[in-house]
Image 1 (cartoon, rainbow, N blue to C red):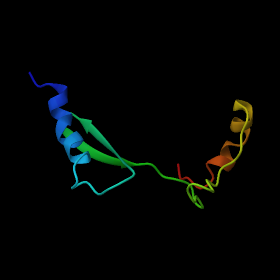
Image 2: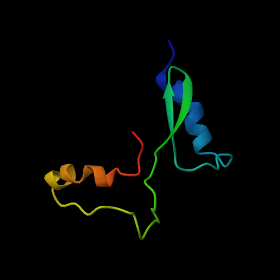
Image 3: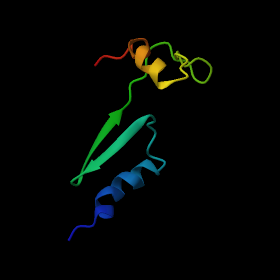
Length: 75
């Protein structure tokens, strides 16, 4: 029987090693296979000062302004 921790251990060891110089990726492990994912940030973001964000205070406000929030992201 294959233990699940044995399947993900190579990824964990690499991510924690000095050889791993990448940043901003999500490593997905499934069925003994790995794939890298990366989130896409909208344009004009300048961390930590300008997140190019839309200020929202309620869920209704977020729903109303969703197109503005996600305007630079291709669906």
